[in-house]
Image (tube, rainbow, N blue to C red; front, top):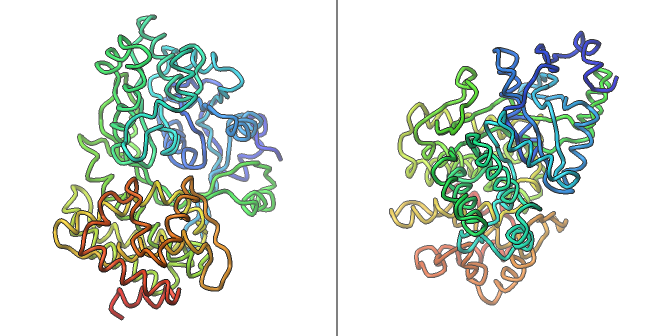
Length: 492
């Protein structure tokens, strides 16, 4: 049976389905960048809210800005916005639920004006974003807005022909201001520290160039709450599609797989109202900073620690890394000895429980998060997830051996592009060529990889760090038995 609105009644006796009247839903949230994570996280929370409360004015309109969003658009259009969320527990239990909170979907490349009009509609209260780090259009070395982007230059010349998120947001806000409507909140849900502040900085930089008066209004009136989001959501595989077909006689062309754990911490700073998600466990707090720092430094960095070393060793998935005692101990050692000392206490968080739970989550044998996915775009991840911990420990004379080892391993991974058995590793990174070119000089210039200042800053000038780094480079390049040297770092 195909997944769509007319088949819901027949499906409801075999799988959990929306109990609210989807025909009466009004979209109060426009979400730009509908992917797996949005559907496992924000859309799931809104679905729970719709199931529980009279909140039918908070449904979601999804927006795809790029041609690359067409596949998602086509599937969700065909399925009336419905999809199956497959939650896989570590003990093998599986929960399956059809999610109905996405009531509408627009593809900007087909009809830009429809997207502007939707954003500008008085009913739109929040515009949320999962556009990945690259979508924020900042120069990685300076952190400033990249005005050299051809699409940005086009938008500055042609404000009524938007191409990027900035063009659409400013066009809609301009229309709202002209109509006397209050502004929407712009809520980043991307995995960037201070994501709301980053979004605000970039939106204002663009708006000041395009329309200074509008920029002044945005600066005063638009809220950009910071948020911390967390739920491991691996890529959907054919096996999951086949599982639903075989177990439920259900044809879902793009279900979502996730772990049972879910967390959302949001700065309580909204321009135009918000849904009462605190009733579902969402934490609204005055300052998200300690929570996002904890998540980025432990979960995201922990993932990279397993991913880089796992790729070199030949482990295919994160859970297979966790079944290897050396990898599990190494990751926990990094968390305990290098991250925890610099985090301090965080209100409402038991740090040991949080780390114990991360081990369970990473080891979930049913999630099968690929090492190649975790390693993808490491050039964007490690400078934010891992290197700041290293720098703080250098400043505080703390342990640096775990983080230093990972950077040496990243150099080897970028250079050789093979695992210990000689099989090629899949490297997905916008800077892949640059990383390889820098890393391949390592044999004759041990610090060559570190001289990429946009990634490493001044680390190549820190004697304590570079001496340890060169020692580790010598070992890994001499014999790529990554596991042996991980045991050395652990003191085993």
